Amino acid sequence: MFAPSILAFALAAMQAAAQRPTTESICDYYTTALLKDNNATNQETIVTLVVNTAVIGNFTPNKFNISVPGILAANQTYNGTAVNLAQYFDGTLASSNRGGSAGVSVNFLDDGGAEPLTKGKPANGASSNQYMLMTHLYEYFGILLGCTQYGNPGYPAYGGDLSMYSVHKYMALDPYDFGFFVQQVALSAASFGVAQADLEVVGGALGELFGHKCSPASHLLPSEADTLQAICVTVVEPKFANGHAKEYASFALGPQTVLVVILDLFADPRQSHSQARKEDPGETGGK
Image 1 (cartoon, helix red, strand yellow):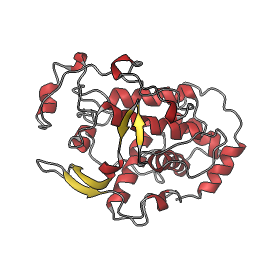
Image 2 (image 1 turned 120 degrees about the horizontal axis):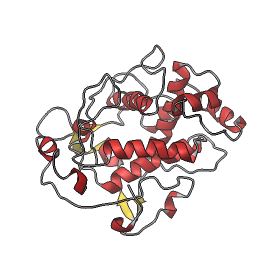
Image 3 (image 1 turned 180 degrees about the vertical axis):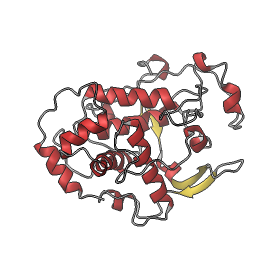
């Protein structure tokens, strides 16, 4: 894919970025800032680096001195609550949807684990669960970040299930799991110089699309049909309590618990993750 050292050099040479024009997507703007040429290959390179860092933590130096533990890191907390996302990736839990009436155990770290990610690759080969997962992440985040060359030669289009609820429905993620995931994406992007205002845009999109149980079906691309997207499925906010619960209930995830859980899902990532506030979730900042 690419040599991480090349991007490390580009990052070290990068001056403080000016404010991103509202007419330019996050992906296009930072691809140009870091790699000069805003083409499909470079856009996928930028997204790959951010995703890989979010998954396994820092593996290249960054001049901002931002520590990224990574989604797979052990012994982590979010707002004072222990989280362990690795168990969803390493086959410990029967949490993967393979089309049946219950989750199954799948090892998504079956092709090199962290080692190929440090080299800018999704996996050692191209036929593993790890390869499928990581390339789908690159492709999906290309949509989310507005990569204008997405789907062109050099940046393949997303080939997975369009419903993120369907993909994640047996994981039963709670707001702490989801919050930690979003936090790692934020920390990773910040470590490559993404401005706070742009981090808030990405965080807002992640929260709005995937963070509300029983939210209405939606889509990312105009060409897509509306599908159920919520992946944080253990609580439902009052504004979504009626109207869409039956749609989600058809996937049979168990009782619908109506609670108000408000988390600061996208606090300033430039603060150490260990300094995350530890108040009761009902007393923290807005979602």
